[in-house]
Length: 152
Image 1 (cartoon, rainbow, N blue to C red):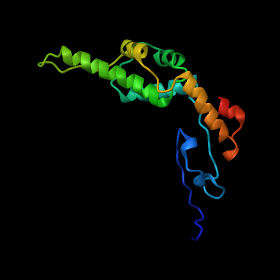
Image 2 (cartoon, rainbow, N blue to C red):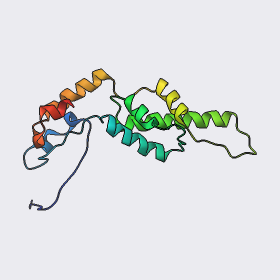
Image 3 (spheres, rainbow, N blue to C red):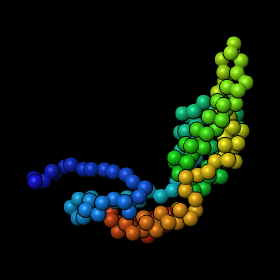
Image 4 (spheres, rainbow, N blue to C red):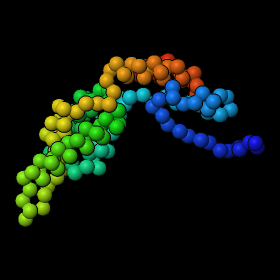
């Protein structure tokens, strides 16, 4: 088999422990990068992106900051699910009381997202998060990750 200079393969996984060890040998997948859970400022940005994608009407200044401060340990997928659940709940509510003559308003606001937050179950609890951090720590030497980066 001949070499392939200039070819890079990129992949992502939340479970590096399930990657075939043959792929992790030198000369194959030589680098790995750990991207931890988003910090509050990153969650704020993620929230703003998802709010733009849904029918959100901001009637409250600073809502994305408020929500980011209350979603510690949420992944990007969790944040999307939270806002998506708010949208689905609003759609369900509107459809139950829909006036067929009027155009239904499925837009959500801060109160809809707050209601979703009260019942939302994030994908990973704190115990699972600690277990995953232990898994990631086993792979910290690949690509030059440090234990500080793994802990964050």
